[in-house]
Length: 130
Length: 130
DNA sequence: TTCTAATTGCAAATAACTTGCATTTAGAGA
DNA sequence: TCTCTAAATGCAAGTTATTTGCAATTAGAA
Image (tube, rainbow over all chains, first blue to last red; front, top):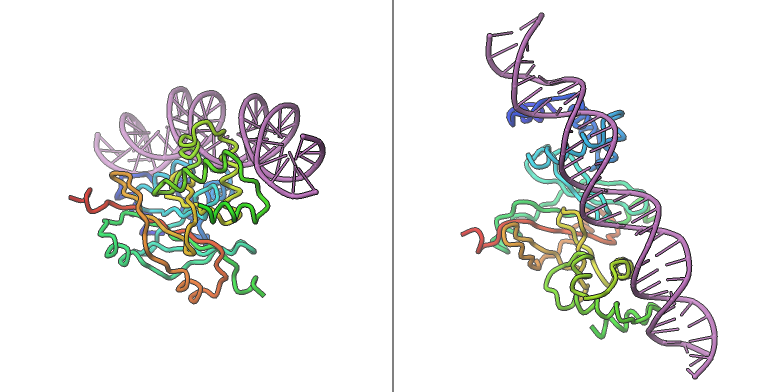
């Protein structure tokens, strides 16, 4: 969190009440949240503010967006260097992090300069399979 | 295409003029299309019809959706057994298919029953890098 | 050919996203 | 600490995307 706050300052952005709330909410969440979910958990923060802040932070590389092919994007803090991926249980709604990275493979395969990527899985978790 | 049409019959669905158009458009496209793009290429087909058909076909496993973290989902025919992935060039807009499959790896890693997944890359293609 | 349930197309509703602008506020400098 | 200004906020209103309702049409089974 301290790292994030100093990164925000470095970027010339202000640290405000709603921004702190948004970062806290994301920091305390173990899964990516939609903008509406962040708003709900922020208690009082305006939708537009959250919306704009999340877009801004994403564009600055503080947040990443993920998408489970439903309507809304979900956002999470980027804590490490690598971009985490997720698996969603269709049955219980649980979202877990996936320790897997194939970006190097794709880079070699395609010769593209990769600037972003997403990789999401949807399934039934071991508990729900029973 | 014949395979798809018979699959539609098997599912107890009717083969109609707009449905043929949608399948043709997707079959002739080398990249996933948004619903609006399909409507435009279908010449005269109603948006709602395309919308509903695409959702229906997706739910039946005839189409897959992909998402490049822009607003609209994109759809493509599922031709083979494996689910194709894509890489988008941010500069020229080209979308190419990626020959890569990590579903078995994820299945082993998580012990989930995987029912769907997506994997998209965004970058700069070799031509645009120059 | 007849009939019926499936499908379509329009219109209208809902939901998601985005912008404009007056007000407020963080935080740099006095 | 106080002042000041650009950045940020919050409301309202606009735009775009998605979804639903329903009467009219149509595929294809009988």
